[in-house]
Amino acid sequence: MPLSFERRPIIPGDNPLEHPPSSPDSKVMGFAFLNNVRRRSRTRAFTLIEAAVTTVIVGVGFVATLELLASGAMATREGAELATAQNLAGNVREAMARVAFADPSQPTHWGPEAGESTAAQFDDVDDFDGWTSPGTPIDGCATPLGSDFAGWTQAVAVTTVSADSVGVALPHGTAAPAARPLSRVTVSVSRHGKAVYSESWLVGYAN
Image 1: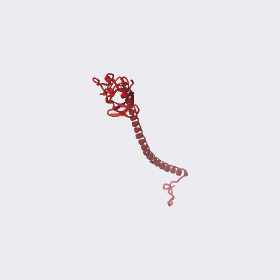
Image 2 (image 1 turned 90 degrees about the vertical axis):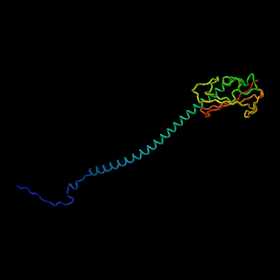
Image 3 (image 1 turned 180 degrees about the vertical axis):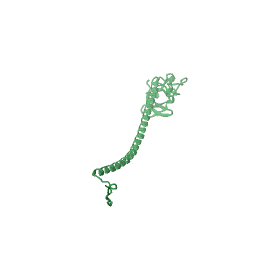
Image 4 (image 1 turned 45 degrees about the horizontal axis):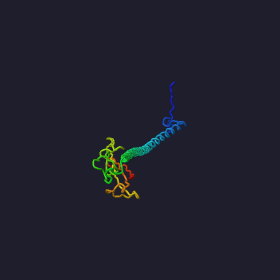
């Protein structure tokens, strides 16, 4: 028996391949896909902005940390330098505490007597006036310190002052110790020519 086919006209919109049937599930999946794409685009843009801001913040914080470390290192170095200078000034004071107020044999003479060229040879306070440590500073026994203190300098000034007003300097001339019974000693400590520390004290004559 021969087969027969019925021909039907194709009406626009009836082609199932051109417009596949849709279902609520397929619509939901489509919207979900679009939302996911949009979300990824937004996420990528936000991450770039966030990364840029984070980089700036980290950079500023890093620079501030470096400055803080540099300041701390400088403060530590200056503190150690000041402590050393104070000790060196104390060495001079200790060395001068071992000598007399005036020279026993020449009490009216000011400054080092003949044969006194080093701090270890000084025997009275005014011998130290104008003295500067040569090469390396001295210890409390007026002995030069080692090369570890190279670059450090101790300088001493001795001034006769009024007993009524220690801020007033008096000419010492060739006066006897009883006529100039009070002297102010100033020790200045420097390192490589830079002043680091200075201290003063009074020394009195006891008859």
